[in-house]
Length: 465
Image (cartoon, rainbow, N blue to C red; front, side, top):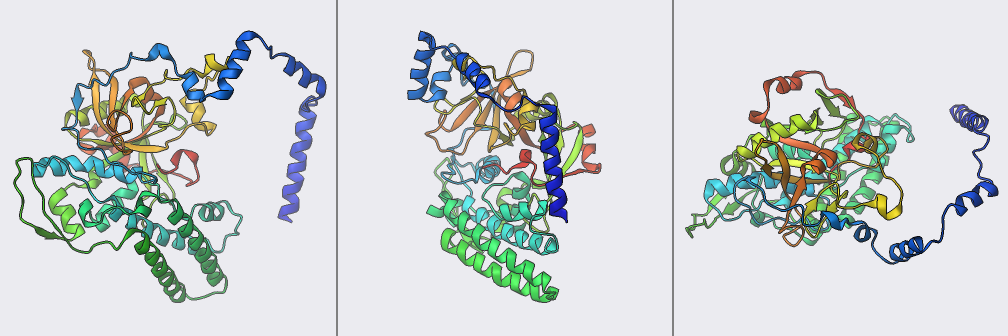
């Protein structure tokens, strides 16, 4: 009956459309008129020859802007460390989160460089996400497979993306280890095949759990089967990423050449004793002009731990966020940043600027959407996480450039770093995570308000890759 009603509504919609727009069909007269609008002038022939044989971005790059943006930054967080490299994986959120904590360790122990094991935290992220998927599959088992929630669940059973909230819960439960304790593997650096297999297995497991619920299996029976399934997931992860250490020894050499005594740690004790940062003291902000500002939002099921917290953030205007960000940089604390990095980005020079590419003049067609319009039409959203580590302040105290630490290796950008103009920051920055001590009390009070619950399939909240 529902399908018949839906079909009737679709037919009615098409009928209404045809009634409102009787000229909607393209006849040949209209098509020929459109075709005749294009003239094979010498200029158009030259443009067609150039565009059909070259990279569009290279042709659209505005030479008039070259040399006008430099990498000079007058306020930076500590000394620059060797940049990290996530390689062919979607773990930018994890690299970024850990990169914001690296300066704490290097300063505390006078190290020239230090890197956490991204592989260790990635292992437990994937394991916990598998458990979360299974729990949601059980809780939604009585809903039809074509419901919005179940469709979203089976379309996105697991992935290697994430954001600060997933890191926050992960590090509190599993701690941290240095890169030497659990080095990268080929699969951690190239996650696509492993992710594909995990998705396939979890979808199979999800269907079985739904059948058990439909067959009225007891909660004890379902949980026992879930644990058995997770044992298989653990096996896949160990074979791909290695076995996560429960205890390890750490020894280091500082800038003065002094070698420390080896000390045994668990991941949890290493986090508490060596890092000693309270990750709950950080607040995520969003600049989303499609929604009201100065409100708290909560993204349903956007987490990796069943017992963890959803992705929660305060939506603020850019100018307010930037005031807090400047305070953090002047206080020598890096921040987690996420943005739409693919827009107006010169990856070789390491520049991010709204005027890098002029598609309007190249095609003679105006591309004129603002940030709000791009978000609403799925044209723009956060795609990548990086660390915000510097700002260039003018004599009036206002920023004109920002320094960003990327995780694509030292051979990308300006030795692994990117310089973004303030205008680019306004247009393509989406999220920033800042320590509470740099945030005004009136904004912190918003954290105590009731959050607006948002669905997990909203395109603005796709995990950073």
